[in-house]
Length: 399
Ligand code: NAD
Ligand code: MG
Image (cartoon, rainbow, N blue to C red; front, side, top):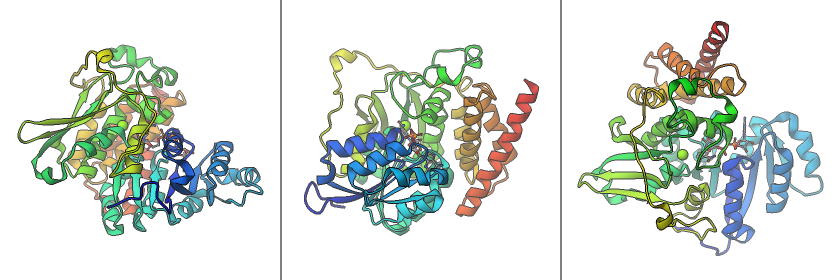
């Protein structure tokens, strides 16, 4: 695939989830890469933060701004009055944004709501810069086959998967032995189970290296984010479960690695800043120039590694189980984890109860169901959420 670099006409881009952590970083990268001279932004979507969405839409002169929240429609309409920018809301609005004729779609909605709009963009043949890992965790087979039928290019934005993508030699795909996903280990890397038992959402969200959205921050502390990334990697790179390794690397400098059959391991390194991975996707197969911190090896001095402790972080074991079982187990893990995450943030359950909840729901739904249609995936997702709510209620009663 070839891409225009700063030449006319500018590349058409839509950002789903523009107001979030990845979304705002994406807009920063767009500005750094040349802004409106280089990109024509067709659509932006957000949810609650309508003021920011309106400001972004005006700055970039987009065609359509969408809030996922129907109740915010009037507020967004008011904020964009006189701008000539079309406004829409809700699921149909998200579908409208995904259907705009953008060459590239940045998929940066958080969680399962990202699945359907991203699939719509994939179906019409858009190239997808994929931050929303849930698309692959819940509906990997359907998503990959939809991409294939649509004919667009899929580039991962998740930093680990961007690293693997950069380390994979396309002509040596059959010589890949395994991939090694690095994990920071989060703020509780060295804590005992007893210490982790009393953790609150405020403590859990303070990440040592990366600045991220709340879901990813808590997921980093519980290592459920890594669990999702193991499943994401399977679909992106067509791997067997046994080819996916996780290693804790507290400095988050090596973003991931690929090991080949001749004993070589290729790694991608950089300061922990999502903008590098975002820019890689937006400039592929070229590279952009970014004002981000450079690695200083003399200052860095050392890189540490340790095996993940699956006793304190059962999420890694649960991901492996979901990978081995296949079918809807990825969707079940994801939906139960999202539900447990909200219950934890709302103070309904403890930090360690998140993994217990996910495991109970995965066991209850371990019936070999395939994940071969969107309806099957959404049904499993809804059932897993309902079961997770059951487990959470029982835990609250017991507490
Ligand atoms: P975030 O919570 O900061 O932002 C989410 C975006 O989705 C916002 O624009 C929000 O308005 C929108 N949104 C929220 N609810 C919605 C709904 N119901 N319907 C439609 N849109 C809705 O999240 P984030 O941290 O930017 O993460 C986005 C995605 O990228 C996630 O899938 C996450 O796993 C992935 N990701 C994030 C990071 C990171 O560093 N933040 C790194 C790798 C991957
Ligand atoms: Mg990641």
